[in-house]
Length: 321
Image 1 (cartoon, one colour):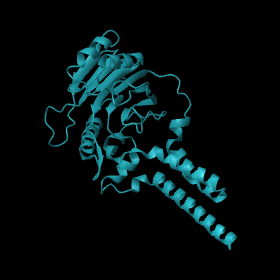
Image 2 (image 1 turned 45 degrees about the vertical axis):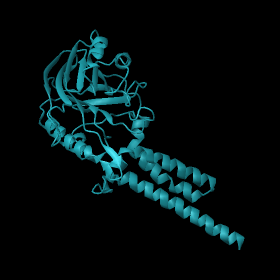
Image 3 (image 1 turned 180 degrees about the horizontal axis):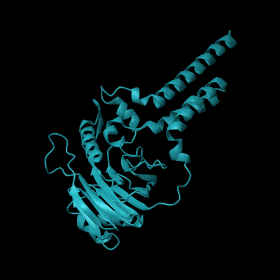
Image 4 (image 1 turned 180 degrees about the vertical axis):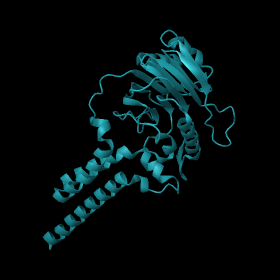
């Protein structure tokens, strides 16, 4: 009787492990099928999708503890699904050469150490320095630190770009959702005269999202992403770089009108938020007509975001923007 009871208990454990493994596999493979109509649950899942890998690890440990061969075999399916989705970011070989480097950072409008933050950005030795949440009070501090190495600059509202190379065709871009005031300026475009050819660079900061009792509140961000996506679709530039705080990951379907027109980095997770315990990369370096070969995050600054450094290889083709 005892043995029969133990056998039933073991079968229940194996059934549970297999069921959980199948469920995790389904979420990884079919995450786009999770509905977004109620509380934008699909977007919430996609924001933290890579972390489902920890669930697979937990299931594997439980299977080992229970000495369940069936449970271990069941873990192969979600492991394979995770590797297909994210293995390239983790195991990609070093890309080697690149033509342009950029560091982008939401510097935080309550950052108590703008000088230290500016020096940290300078220490990345990036050709381009893009910032968001730049306040009028902090702006002179960034200008003083970056002026010598990045003499070309443009600021529109709360976003700014410092460049080691000349800038032209500079203008603000309007990505305001309906009802937002004209004073809400979080986008700019400039053409960078890089040595390997001109590149159109957008620096943007999309509206924030909130996770609360009603779910994942991202309607304003999604609307702003659609506006930016339309601008990029109409932009004739052959080489185009979009950097900034998108308040969303590249897996988040709410950003599809934008991210579907751009290529994500080939390597690097570069989780950038929150700085104290990074859980997601919501600060992006994306391209069209170029290849973002890798991204990574330097050390924390006085902001609640980490900086994100990207290396860019300019695709072959005609110059110009």
